[in-house]
Amino acid sequence: MGKKIRVLVVDDSALVRNALSEVLTSDPEIEIMAMAQDPIVAVSKIRDEVPDVIILDVEMPRMDGITFLKRIMAQHPIPVIICSTLASQGSQAALAAMESGAVEVIEKPSLGTKKFFEESKIRICDTVKAAAMVKVSVRKHANPLKVSPKLTADAILPAPPCKAVDKTTETVIAVGASTGGTEALKVLFESLPPDTPGIVVVQHMPANFTKAFANRLDKTCLVSVKEAENNDAVLRGQVLIAPGNQHMLLKRNGDQYYVEVREGPLVSRHRPSVDVLFRSAARYAGKNALGVIMTGMGDDGAKGMLEMKQAGAYTIAQDEESCVVFGMPKEAIKLDAVDSILPLEKIAEDLLKKCRAL
Image: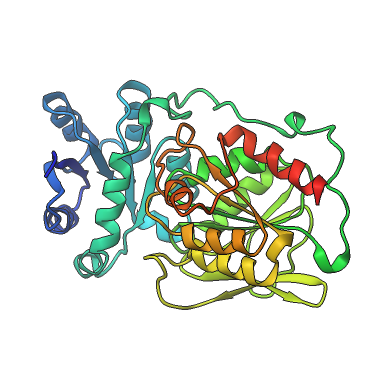
C-alpha cells in the first residue's frame, strides 16, 4: 500500500472533528494528520507539517473559513474541502469559497451530525481521495485578488449560428462533471453564444446548492442558466442544471425535448448521476445529441457516454492537462466512448463546429 492521504480537519465543533476522524480513519488509505478548532490553530499545525487535504468549516471564531481559504490559495495552495451547514442553504458564501479554490463541498447538517457522517462514509472518503489528486498548483483561483482568466463569447463570435435542423431533430448537448466542474462549466458556458442548442447538465453538488450555482452563472453567460424543474423545455440558448440530490433525464414529446426531474436511488454512487442523463440522451436524442464529460473523480458518465456514442451522438472528453481530476474522462476514454479529447478552452469551439455540421 502506498503513502496514506494526510488530512487536517479544521472545525470549531469537537463533535464534528471527532466524527470526521472516525469516518476518515476507517479507510486504510487515509489518516488524520491533525485537528484544529479554528484557522489560527490550523496555521500552526501547517507550519509543522503540510497536509495533503484540508477539511474546513466556514463559520468559526477568530477567522472565518473563507478568509483562511483565500490565504491558503494565495500563499501555499492545498486541496480544501468545505464542510459546512451553509452548504445546505446554497449560501453565496459557500459558493464563493468553491470559486476561491475549494475543490468540493460536503453538506453538514445542523443536527444529527455524527449519524450523518457515518451514513455518508463512502462519499466523504471518496471526496478526500479526489481532493488529494487535485492539481492545486495550477488552479486559476490561487490568487484571491485576481479575477481568473476566462474565455468569453468573443472567442466564438462572430461565428455563424448553429445550422438550423428539422424540428424533430433539434440538437441537444448533454454535459457531465464533478470535482472541479464548477469552474470548468463556468469557462465552457461563458464561451457560448446565445443561440447555442439547448444544454442539459449534471454537476455533482449538494441539494440546494445547484440553484445558487445556476443563478451565478446566469449573470455572466450569454446563454441563460437555471436549475432545472420537472417538465422544463430544453430550449436553444438555455442551460438546465440538474438539482442536487435528484436525477434528471432528457425526454421527448413529439418535436420538443424536455427534462424529467425525479427521485431515485444513487447511480454510480451519485444523485444526480451523469450516467442517468447520458443514457436518456442516447435513448431520446440519439444522433441529434452531443455529449461532454468533464473533470471529476470516479466513472459516473463513462458507460452512459458509450451508449450515446453507440446511438450516433458525437462525444467529447476534457483532456487530462485541463482537468482538476482526470477520472471521469479517463474512464470514458478507456471504454472507447469518446470521439474527441480536448482541452477545456477548446470544447466550446468544437461543440459549435459540430452543431454547424449537423
